[in-house]
Length: 374
Length: 260
Image 1 (cartoon, each protein chain N blue to C red):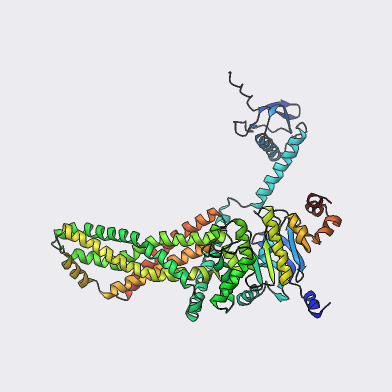
Image 2: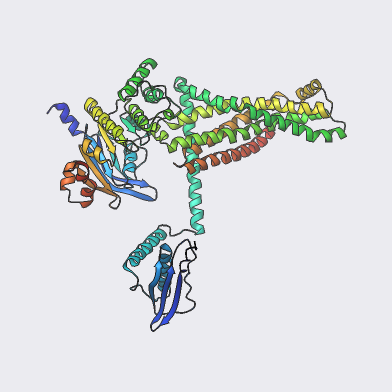
């Protein structure tokens, strides 16, 4: 069986006539195939006429071509003559021209850098205002909770504690253990050269308790719990569940955000404490394996250098990080667009914002603790 | 007519004046004014994208109007503060398009939540009332099911049970028939009728389901996207037969529904 013959390719022939140019279109115009584009050169005709007698079939590609010719004529002050075109093409051309003009008119400054900067600034101010409003609502909610603890949704709070605390133990264990192990491993060789093997316990103990324990726990929870908060609340918003709460006069912040914030605020320091222990254990194993330091000697050295202030500063940091993760997760979720992509954006934004806030807060804590000699 | 009835007539359930709805940079509806009488079933109809749901969101306080005002049961609604709004919302029940049940709670807990939040009833009474509301909607035996474990029609009925939990004076329905088969849809219409007859509840329904409109509506307004507002107000039959506007007659073409 012989293959079907190729349909004639789309063509546009420009030929001079007495009062200007005539564009003759022919062949099969399909938007999925290669079609000619309008390139008249440097001519400045008084009139451009169009014919499409040789066109066998056509679609939007033909309309776009004719619209280009018409727009070019307007820019060159040449008369566009489409009278030879079929009635249907002329009607569709009118629709195309008016629709594209309306679309451009509705975005008159699109691509303008000043507009882009203005819009971005407006959005940033709006986001900051929303964040302040949200923090204010949460504060009022905390006061209400303290006044009427019976009204607080303890069951949801305990559920969240289970989710963000107990369920996070395996990953927190693994990461903390590896961080402690890596720190000790890196330090071991250097310290051995100076005969200061035992100080590996000091290095690991202090860095884990003051910095790495709370920080690594926060990073894990930002990715795990902050994202989960944003996704859950964003989905609830898309499903009108948040609207349903509002129409019943129930504050979504009190109902949904507060139990999550309390849960994270309570679980974060506990997880950080656990992370400290596992991190120190990781260091202890390396010290035993590489430096032949006995666990009891390692533990005594750790106790001698890590004091209660170090533990407290770590826990203060952890609680703050927990609240920051909760706030960014809940805020991004409650402000998510009502669509699948909106929920995705909210989740990404929650994690990125939480990580940023954690790093900024950590830097501030470093300065404050230094000033307070803690 | 009794004094009570006079009183009901004097204070409309909802009074909307010069409402302008939309978002910061887009106006969807302009100068919308209408009144919903106490105890009537009132429809907001129109073609897709004309602003029906947007108007409903303004009526229930989910969106603030760009201009104009809404009065609910004679009291200002759009201009009041959060605490007063919270009080007024107790008079509302809203059935959202998909039911909007809280997915982490069982059906019983969904219906019980408004009672827990707004009443001082004992836990046992709240549970009894929740079970009663669910039974009214034909959902006995499903009290401990989660929303993900039941069908779309059942979710809507559970949503209605929740909307009626506080015996509201006004119940709003957003496209109640959307996604339902004709039998379930007719059953929901029957429930709406019973709610009005039993409790004298004012009912506002956003819909373009002609069967429900002709079967239930006392009065309606029709919105139009081009006009950005109301193009007709009255009873469905009267409008279908006598409206001078061809858009209204076409939308409400009786022949396609009743063969008249």
